[in-house]
Length: 322
Image 1 (tube, one colour):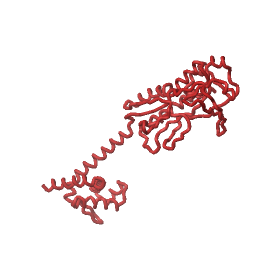
Image 2 (spheres, one colour):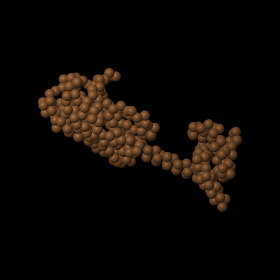
Image 3 (tube, rainbow, N blue to C red):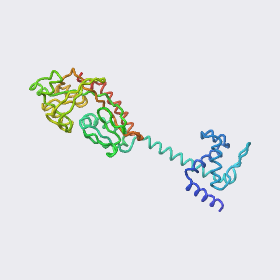
Image 4 (spheres, rainbow, N blue to C red):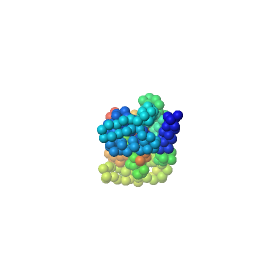
């Protein structure tokens, strides 16, 4: 009967003061196992004073003496001997639970929610995702393609793939790959309208703009010295893939990422316009919320994209138009 009352006392103490008593329980288990407060302090990485204080507080909350200690020796009381097997079991179970949670945190699983531009998503990201899910069969993917800049927080996205410089302080950007943008048009269009020779010639050509604005600026140059050229839209469209298709149909000149038009340039379906005038670079970034813990699945995906996109560069993708 005495032990049953003691078990109730221990259970109540741990329930009411779990945050305080679990460290105390662990100190008690180590002190008994190692036979010394000093040894327990060394193993736990605590000072001797902290270990002594935790043990005393633990005994006070339980209302029993667990260990008799003096400057020369340490002796476990009868109550301490009765408690020790239970303390050992609890500590071991806590360590096993902690190990399980740690493995789950490091496991690449769950749902990865990604948003990306239409053209890049269809042409580049989907094939990469096909390889990524083979590497991590426990992972599920939700891919949202849009040329609009969506809000990651309200949309519930883990990350976004975006072109250009980061302008939102709530976000963190990691460069995935350098990105060249080029002006291009179909051979049919250039045969009908002529090849522009100067930037000012763009004023007299049909330009296809991505977005809804009837006018924009295309910036040429780099390294802090850029020249803006104001361009009026003959056609404006909010879908980058549709704009790409319009250029292939000979409807005008378009400014596109090399990632979107590399194959068309290589095959001759599109030709580069004004190749001597470099367009200001807009790097391809992985963007995620600042201050948020980066889940292992997100970190693994970003690392995967960095490696695979660098391989694409090495294969000559970014230099097709050089």
